[in-house]
Length: 209
Image (tube, rainbow, N blue to C red; front, side):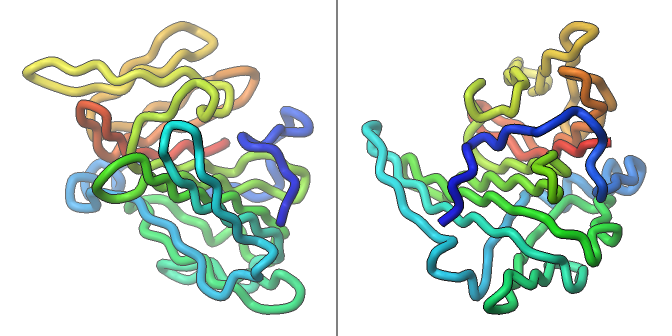
């Protein structure tokens, strides 16, 4: 089991060696049809998996992987984690491309969080070999400040529209749903792509540029 902290601590602010990319036009056109983000891991080593019960009654299934990306498929990353080949299956918003990750060493922190009845919250962070975030995706409950990788995220709900507000270095930004926004926070160049937003329900991808 990995001993990496959660959220991961970035070692320095330099851009990561391998980046995911976003085509904003494709995302905007397809986001309503995409609807959700999902991650799961097939054939993970036993040491990579853990289950945690919390005082509030929630339950977290966590998978921590580090390996070289052998191939990038339409809906999966195939990782060589040493003793075996592991497949990270995903449903990401249209317009996000991971092809540049091929042959790079990456780490994945995947959490499935069950807080009440219904589906789990999916929270996945992919980082480069130096521990720098490549992307973070979240689908489910709105993350707390502790979970938000140095960001502050809030939903604003009114009868006409639900928006996601984020604190950037230049002030508060507000995203419509669906929508994308490039911004800078803590010296990092980021892109936020909002897929879905409800009263306490959100689906988004945050990419490091």
